[in-house]
Structures are given as C-alpha cells and as structure tokens.
Length: 178
Image 1 (spheres, rainbow, N blue to C red):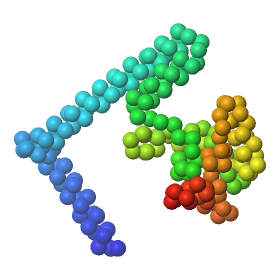
Image 2 (cartoon, rainbow, N blue to C red; image 1 turned 90 degrees about the vertical axis):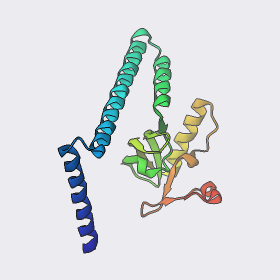
Image 3 (cartoon, one colour; image 1 turned 45 degrees about the horizontal axis):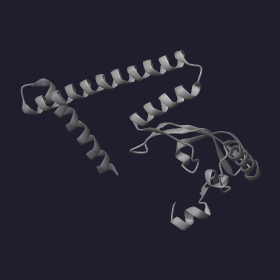
Image 4 (cartoon, rainbow, N blue to C red; image 1 turned 60 degrees about the horizontal axis):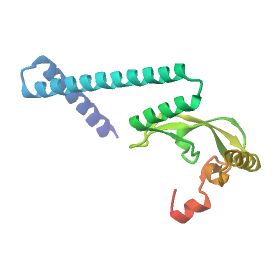
C-alpha cells in the first residue's frame, strides 16, 4: 500500500515536471505538439459554443412564434438527438436516479435522467420515488391507458429487497441481465 502511494506521488511529480518543461521551452517538438493540441481544443470549444447559442436562439424563436408546445418539444428533441443526449426513464438503472420521497420496494420515475447516447455517461440525474407495488402498478396502468399503450408497468419499476438491493425481474434473469 505504501509503495503504491509512493509510486503515485512519483508519477504526479513527473507529470508536473513534464508540463514545466513544455511551458519553459516552447521551441521543442513536444511543446509544439502540446500547444497545437491546445489550440485545436480551444477552436473546437468555440465552434461548439457557437452551435449551442444558435440552438438556443432557434428554440427561443420557436417558443415566441407559437403557443404550440409540441413544436418546441420537437425542436428540442432534434437538438438533443444531434447532441447525442437521450432521456432515460428506466429506474432499473439505479445509479441514474435520486430517490426523493416515498416508502416501498418499487421505484417510480418522477423526472427522467439524461445520459450521453454513445457512452451512457450520466449528464443529469433523474428523480424517483419509492412506492408500494399496488400503488405503482395502479399508476402505471392508468398512465398506459391514458397514452393508449399497453405497458407492463412492473418492468419499468425497480424491485428492492429489505436491504435496498436490486432484485432482478424474471425477464432479466431469463436473459442473464444483472
């Protein structure tokens, strides 16, 4: 354990020394590569910021020109798709949700989580509440009926044991999902 800490400290010091040498002598090829990489990152960040500002302007224009929230949602959905941002409303991904209220063995999503599409990286944590099985099932069935959808609500809820650990659904066990 002590050797690992010493090794980590040595690596940190070598990294700082390398940075100091790059900054001290900008004429070396290593310094030139570092500065070129930094220049490219700054240019990319400026383009991304400009793109984000254009998207905000388009969304604002859409909201000002119509009372139809569906149009704004459509524009926002397109921007999210372009950015690779998706909503996640599956409470079986417990690391993506904060339980904010309730008591029970099931979780019900209040607000979706936002994740990066390609990597699954959490962008914004969702919110969920704990519910008893009957309460959650009844709400799920009502939501499904309202939307004209047939939904097996228990598959969209997370079952927990007394210790707060996730219990896999039967369909997950069949597929080997953990």
